[in-house]
Amino acid sequence: QKEVEQDPGPLSVPEGAIVSLNCTYSNSAFQYFMWYRQYSRKGPELLMYTYSSGNKEDGRFTAQVDKSSKYISLFIRDSQPSDSATYLCALQQGGSEKLVFGKGTKLTVNP
Amino acid sequence: DAGVIQSPRHEVTEMGQEVTLRCKPISGHDYLFWYRQTMMRGLELLIYFNNNVPIDDSGMPEDRFSAKMPNASFSTLKIQPSEPRDSAVYFCASSRGAGRRYEQYFGPGTRLTVT
Image (cartoon, rainbow over all chains, first blue to last red; front, side):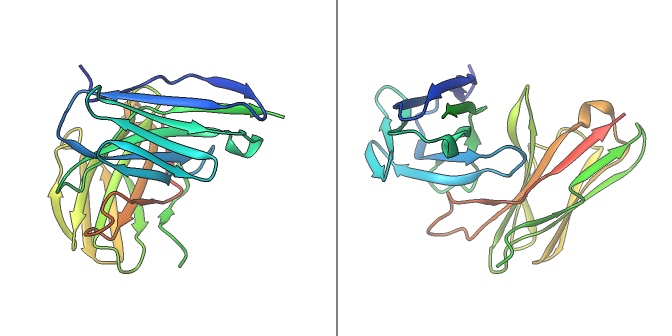
């Protein structure tokens, strides 16, 4: 079983839709949960992070972590064409510098 | 700050040739990471340094790969000899470490093609 599983998509939605992106993981030692966004031909950039279980909101983005189910989600409200990118979940154990990335989900928001 | 700088941006080489990828991390960052990204395997950590010292190279695929960090502002990833299966995008990233260790800043990547 891989440490982190993420549906690669692709996912195509109309502008204004609510988008749900998800990852599952197997190692209960993960404590930090991040979402990175990667535009085409660019490096990933940190979008949101969450420590342990719970929700975190930042504008149109909400990150959700359920440690009991080993399931993390990213919700995008009122999606915009500028949100078109690949979204990678990344997980980190406490005290570790290493990030374990999902393979990424490619999202296209159509105007 | 200019961000993480990588060179070259694109590299096309023939099988058997030596390839050297270069990275300049963000000034003041203590950690430097080398990743490889492919469609099949996603983003994989190859090696990372703390204060110029290699900490974990367990992701380096084989002895053909080597990395160095001679000072705080420069690192290289070398592949010798290169093989077609090494074709990928190689990213360098840096981070401050303590406090925001989860936040890594990535460079634009080097797209390597080995024919």
